[in-house]
Image 1 (cartoon, one colour):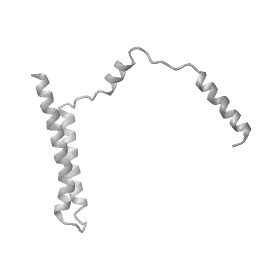
Image 2: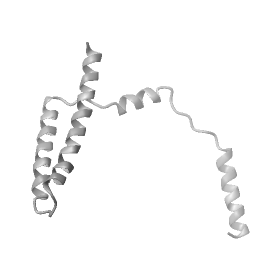
Image 3: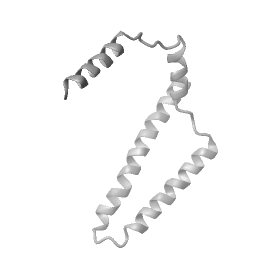
Image 4: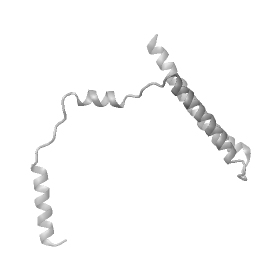
Length: 101
């Protein structure tokens, strides 16, 4: 790096360090939290999600039918993620019931 480039870099860094720090509005945290909160699925949304999951399951099994692998491995790759999702959903459902009651 040439001396001229170093001087330019030093000048840029000096300007950046002397600039005022931007601030957020007072209600920024509240607005951000409200925006990022997950929304609950309605009946139709759950139905669409269940249908998509079913089609994905059938499609995965159909796509892997030609793979020269044991069926136990294929079933493991398909069923294990479904079981994980079921456990997580069950935990959230229990938590929601506890807070509601």
